[in-house]
Length: 296
Image (cartoon, rainbow, N blue to C red):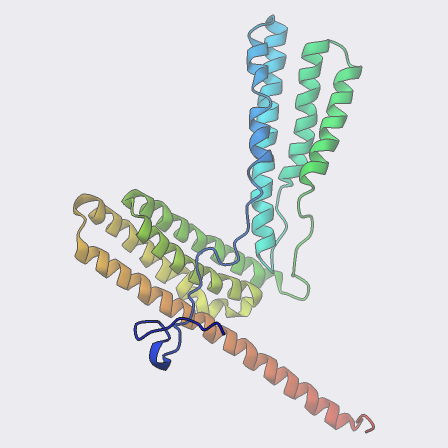
């Protein structure tokens, strides 16, 4: 019969339990859609640059106009996909303020129409190119989110406050990542990403219940701002002389921040559970006062 290998130095040796698995930076991560096909949109119109300088002045203007329009459409499409992924990652989210993918579809059709007019010099073929290009782009990438998600019964003022606070906190995390890139240490980057995963768990908890913003505001602003400044200062020291004591102190800071953010997240979840328990008890008391009970 097969048995699991174990020894005195194994994690579960001598009856010791295995340590709890840490939540990695890639937990719940999904492959981004802002690549692959979108990158091809940047490459496809490049031959128009050659065509622009092998024709007359009219062809030069038309082909360069088509090239710029198609590149703008590709950029809007990529930004629209990034905005949609951010929208889908949150349980409560506002729709994008500007429909980038739809605008990308229209600009793709316009760019193809201009390119077709520069090549054919008539109106029927370019019009067909414009319609077909718009439809195919729309079918390939789809529309932008056009409705708010999870906002039914939620105070929009509170939701907007949470959205602004989370956006500012994400900027602090992005600044920390940019600073750590200058350090050129993959282990430190992985350690920072682990803390950022815990911090984003707190973001999602606050987004799910905007009433938690008051209790978590210091974590989203003051503490992350201090962590950003500490990261910038550490990368400056580490890039100059690779001070091991500075590295030890910075890793200890990340550990303290990670533990405190995780504890705050758990506290907010327990408070939400307590609120649910109160709501259930109140509802049961009201049903009892009605005097209506199901027959056994």
